[in-house]
Each structure stands twice: as structure tokens, then as C-alpha cells.
Image (cartoon, rainbow, N blue to C red; front, side):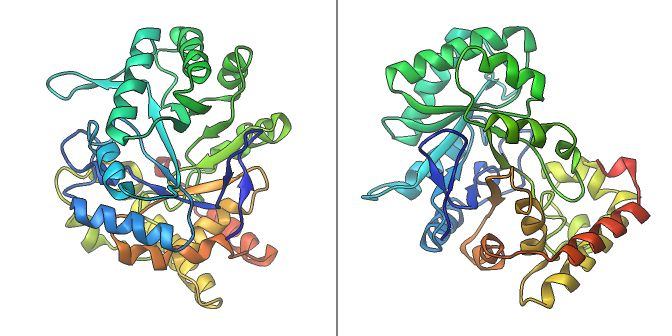
Length: 323
């Protein structure tokens, strides 16, 4: 599979990587409902067998559980994939999550992630959210200390705007940005992508299928049957009036993809990868069977006419609440 350089690092990553958010399970506020660990391990193995060479997780996913599942999946591997994780979201004894960017917190979070992941160094360590913003400088100084110590190899950020990236870049190299990006949520095209392209900051996008909405498999019935603790039940894109528009978009993607023997999900991911500034996409998978339905996105190229058809649909169906 093709590999692309992530920013100015030596990380050569495949266009698709494993997203381990849902693998954290349902024991926290932003879970995706119940998740079987054996299914998660099998999904990771299937993705690696398909040629994907990186996994993106975070300490907060399942309050540490996702990282533990990743470690279980990689146990005994002679040549493991790159492992990316995140800091800056912490939780208390009651599981309440909050942002924290103090130096000592960042250092301790890294130690905890190394222990859970059972690795000697984290390939890409990312600040999950720029919150609280007044502590960004302190947090990045801690990141640079971790890099000097050898605990992490490269450092990136998630959900930052260009001004925030520029601020921490003054203290050390920012390898990558991880922002949300999909046909439904294209906001980063205005400023983030041009900035990252100019500054050679790699971009690994998350939610390219908008949390399952653009897989072509979401229906109103499936939406209604989501577990009560699935965070998507409360999100605007999964509720009317946005839901009808988004399901119609999924149908359009399904029709476009079918002409190429692809799935709607692959078309949605390919739409994101069409931008030269986008290095790769994080693809959330929950079982081994899902890999086959998205793996073809790495080599799928939408034609200019197909991109224009998608743009025309979005222009004729504006919906602010979909964001």
C-alpha cells in the first residue's frame, strides 16, 4: 500500500489508519455503546493484514481501556505498526472528563499511556484539545521534554486552529494536525488545510464518514436502535432535520461508489483524501468484517465530475444544524 510522509517527520504512513475510539467501550461519556474487546483485537489484526500501518487512540477513550486493547492486539508482534495517542483530557474517580495542560499532568499522562500501551516510545503524541488555552505553552514545553527523553518520537495536535498551531510551533516542531473533516463538516478547507500545506504540517483527519453516517449502512431504524449510551444519539447530524439530508447524501455516495465497485464509505473517505494537504484518514472500525468495506478507499480516486456532483448536492441542501 502507498505510504506518505507525515509532515516533516520520518513517519511514512498508509492513507488509512485504525481509529480506536469505539474500542474504548461504553464506560465513559463519549462511548459508542458496548464493544467486545475480542472484536476490537480482530479488527486491528484485519486492518494490519490489509496493509494499514498505524493506529490512532487516546488515553481518554474508555478512560484508558482503548490503549489497553491496542496493547493486547499488538502483543507478540515482531514488527508492530506505528502507535499514535493523545494527552490533555483527564478524568477523576467518578469518570468525569476535563481538559488539563499543566506540565506535570502531561508528563504523567505520557507515563500512563506508555504503561497501558506496553511500548518504550510513542510514535506520535498529540495534544487532544487546546483546553485550557492559557496553558498551551506549558504543555508544549512538556511535550518537548518528553521528546528529548525519548518517551515520544514526534508530536502533533488535534482540534487546533492555525493560530494555536503557530503558537506552539514557536516552541518546537509540530508534526501534524488531527482535525474533523468530512463532506458534512468541511470547515477546515478555509484556513486549516492551506496553513498546513504551506507549513508542511501533516494532516490526519478524523470522522471522514461522520461517525458512520456516510457508510451507506445507517438508516433511521438503525439510528433509533443505537444504545442509549452511544454519544451519537445526542448529536445534531443524527437528528432531524439534518438526518434526512445526511442519509440522502449517503445514498448519493452509494450510487457514485457502485459504479466503481466501491462502497459509500470508501467514497466518503476518498473525498477527504482528494485534498493534497491531507496525509491520511483515521477510519474507525469495530470488527474485522468492517475492514473490507473501507480498505479500497486508499486507492480510490473520485473524478472531477463526481466531486462536482457531491458539491452540487451540498450546495442545494444547506443545513447549518448538520454541523
